[in-house]
Image (cartoon, rainbow, N blue to C red):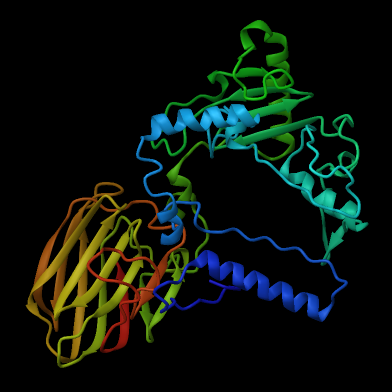
Amino acid sequence: MENHNRVPRSLDPNYHISHDLADHAISWMQREKEIDPARPFFLYIAPSATHAPHMAPKEWIDKFKGQFDIGRDRYREMTLERQKKFGVVPPLQWTKQVASHFGGTRNPMIVSWPAKIKDKGGVRTQFHHVMDIIPTILEVANIQAPDVLNGTPQKPIEGVSMVYTFNDAKAPDRRKMQIFELVANRGMYQDRWMASSLSFIPWEPVRTGFDPDKAKWELYHIDQDFSQADDLAAKNLDKQKALVDLWWAEAAREDILPLDWRAVERLSDQLTGRPSVAAGRSTFVYGTPLVALPEASAPDLKNKSFTITAEAEVPADGGDGMIFTQGGITAGWGFYLQKGKLVGIHNYIGMERYRVVSTDSVPTGKVTLAFDFKYDGGGMGKGGAITLLANGKKIGGGRVEKTAPIKYSLYEGQDIGEDNGSPVDFTYKPPFKFAGKIEKVTVELK
């Protein structure tokens, strides 16, 4: 997507999104400088190759061929030795989602301002938070944050500008404290002390029976223990209690309470009651091919029976192509023609794929094709039966033992007439456009 508009899949076999993002960024900067050379600009670019699925270009992968054959344990030892040599050892605890420890929150930042910062390459140790970036930019730009925006009163900005550190490496910290919380993983920083309470490891699915009042709290003196390796809680109970009490006070002030430690359930519109343009409807009619409809705006196919009916025109050769899909490589449904046969499939969170193929070929010409799913019931994520029909006649059927109960994808949507995103299974390659003509697709929830 670009500016909320769909970007068609590239036909270049060597296409890579990181190159495309860089080209767009360069083009944008060139236009900005040509229109108004004196006007400052802000550019944020996030290459896509550093997150699973890792999409580094083949030529880059080839450069490192064989370098990791020693195995991860030995490579980790070598990496640690290099880090010690250069003085850049992190050993920070934990990772993303764990806001209680710096391994889940701490990131490096580089500030460049040649006209004003004289200490080129200098290092700063003052404690700051991401919320301090906006006040820093405002001070540098000599702009006062508005009290009212479009008639709406604004909350005061709570961040602390970092400009005071730019030319004074030893300036005393101006940020005195900071609260942290994410899915009940909690942390409280104050004056170089940090209290940390780990509640759940990332993606832990079962979170019942948790009592935040009984969770363990650790205590670290950050000046002497950057990586939070030495828990001082047992030796300094007064400091620990003071920080825990401060956490609860700040949590109330910052509207963090009540705590919500649910995991994947928070992704579910059904469980959270999030508003949806599809809520309350049981019949959806799509008269033209449609792509990239967000899952939250599409009919909710989870934990229920449904029927997808397509009025189509199938070419004389039987045709191939997607009729209807919701989701993609992580989970979802597919309903398509392949080699003249009708196919219905459910992708269960990438772990199982239940694929049903019709025993008979689909009639050519104008035809009514249907995918009927009868849910077993009895709770969330249960199985059911797929029935494939052509002109009302059953031409195939099979079982789905488990269904994705919460969310199909964070980034895929619903497509009709092609698959705009990742494939729901690997027997075809997107965009897998329907070779015939789709007059209408009706989805009925039951």
